[in-house]
Length: 119
Image (cartoon, rainbow, N blue to C red; front, side, top):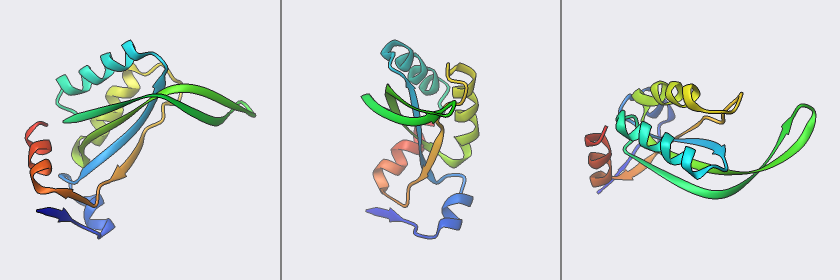
């Protein structure tokens, strides 16, 4: 069964709503795996997907920069968002780490149960 909620206010205000946090890291797989294991060990995420060799283009110090990075897709809930942000900021080498949250508006009920039971 698919669980859906298209009301942005109820999604944002529900502490149990699933979110995906996007976070880019330096192209250092060892560091990425250490961060992933830390988040999982502290039960801040149920699942984290690591995408290798993403290419980022961005403004930095009045120049356009490019970098090969690692992208993490961190699956968690609204109520854990700030704790995830805090842990990443504690360990992340960037001055301003990318931390973006995407609200999930639909998921399969078994996945929702699995995710919540692993946090």
